[in-house]
Image 1 (cartoon, helix red, strand yellow):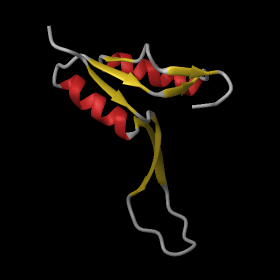
Image 2 (cartoon, helix red, strand yellow):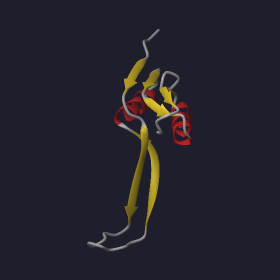
Image 3 (cartoon, helix red, strand yellow):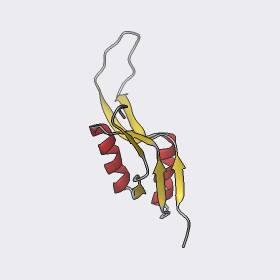
Image 4 (cartoon, helix red, strand yellow):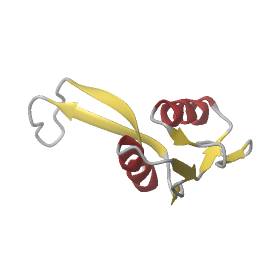
Length: 92
């Protein structure tokens, strides 16, 4: 039986804005904003999980909708988040 890989660190929502063209100083161009799960430790955990390793994530995740959504993403990727510290006082 292989030992699980434990990734300790940040898991968060990356907010990424993109446009099709460059905007000049003070310019305004159409684009889109995308949110995706990220953070260094999360990205490493995702890589190991995709390689078939049992992966555990240790992090602080708020007890808010954003935190619940992150746990769902982790579970969908096969990353065990049951040991994450869940705070009701600090948001994700």
